Length: 528
Image 1 (tube, rainbow, N blue to C red):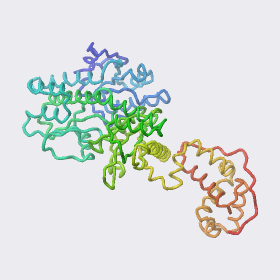
Image 2: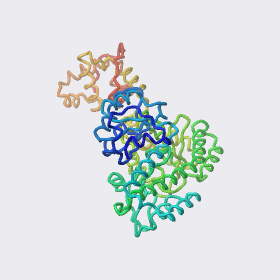
Image 3: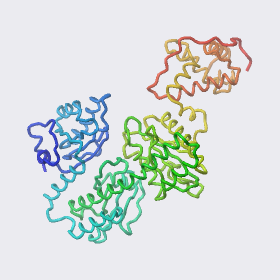
Image 4: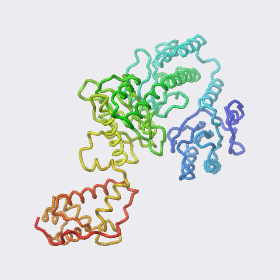
């Protein structure tokens, strides 16, 4: 199949935006669906690349488009099929980048499902290669009836490969969770399953799903099965996943309603209990609350990521939804063990799920266990503060922070907004932050060492390789500029907190010095 064949398919309605004279005749040998800003490692030569352009934003759009298209060129992609739904049209900067790099680009109308395009490519491609090898008609009929009855992925997979002798097959999510497996297939740990996805699986296309929840079909001996047959099985699994997503819509609305209740009226314990029942949760705890956020790089993705995290915990009841301001949250019952929920608390699941979109930092907060509905609003507050701490601690790296881990002043301060930390540091440290003043840096270093040495003149002098008299002089200058008395425990705590606020700021944030400092209450030396 060539690029021009895809463009000539009137049922798809693709709009050619740019192509060189001979580029439409390039052969397409596969399809990759991606919204990564750098898709290099997922694109193979000759593939059509489908992208919803979630990664593109008007801010820095030209540079982002350049990096994305350069990656497609390096991977030797056949054509870029750019979705128009996210931005209303394909950005001009993206079309211009395609022209510079010689990558054909076509727009995909908002009403056209990506799965329709992948089906078109694969059915034609594999039909040309192997017209006589596909699912037997009796199997196709069985699968259709199973879908009509709402069968799950285990039943679909078993029926799809039943005619293949001793076939061992799995359906994995992007994070390596096993969704379905044939009877007798050995269990595969999530990390190993992710490696199998990298080396050889068939993607299952489903509509409007989070990238964290995508399914992948894996057969142990895939080479013995005609490719067209694998694509047909994957298509039936995609319809199964779409059906499951529609059935979850009511549960998601109930979870959203419960989130609104906890955020705005958490003291109404009776209403919270009703909301828990509507979500299928037990009337009494213990419960945990988890919240998640994917920030500006992945708007709207956090709920799917959190649903996948919860699915890793097991098949039990859970509520996954959104809070009024858009943060994803989940309420999960606490199992009756001493280490619960182990996969989340020990950090085993979070990095696996985050790897589904490596360019998007996945931040999360986990509450302490709470006994009943009346404590859920407090647990939500704990989890939200832990989330803020995770964002403040590692803004560009995926991280889950437990409320129980906020045991030090530094971790506690990381949950305070960056702007507040910067303002407090500037207000307390004043001229010590003025990089234009040559004496500011030595005074700041002396303050940090003096506080770290518990106010000991001798140990501070030894740590800084200074004479004790020099330390005395610098401390007097610090007191003069900051208006704080370093013999006072309260003032020492203020200064230490200001230093921690400064040290926990992201590298991109700078603190302009205060215009003036305050006079110290006393500028005379005191014995320590």
